[in-house]
Amino acid sequence: MRWWWLALVLLVTSCSSPASTQLANTRPAPAASEHSDADALVSLALERFLADPKTLPDAGLLPKVGPIYVLREIGDSGAVSQVALPAARRPFVLIALADAQAQADRSNDSVHFIKFDGVSVNGTTAAVTVGVDFVMPKSTSAIKMCCCAGTDTYEKRGGQWAFVRRGLMSCS
Image (cartoon, rainbow, N blue to C red; front, side, top):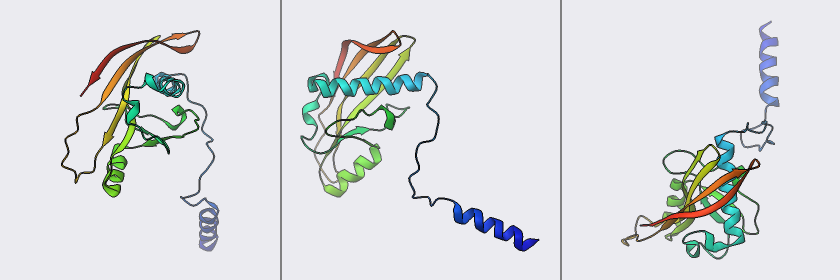
């Protein structure tokens, strides 16, 4: 009986996928919630930037070629999800702050990214604070005198979020 149990364990473990194998997303779509609203709002802000780069404060700081990094972290809580990134000629790529810092240290060059400081949903009204920021190599002695972010107001109309107006701009 023991050999049968051992054979079953070996069969099950040999049939499982290795950890590095990419599996198709088989999870059901998220329920309509604030999280999916946040994804829609991040996507809408990025689509506005694609249509008109002037809608993103400090967009001129982003590199002119290569992928456009989007900071994964949103403020002190929350995160940008992969589904929120629209398809674009220059792909949007999520990057964690620690990974951006490590890349800056390795390359001895600053890493610029789009940063969402906040996505706040209150019923059918939302505020999205977004701008461009960067990290410098830790070895630099330069002082960071940048960046600006704008808070945009969105309203949900007919089940879809729509941009209403640019509100406060803050620069550090």
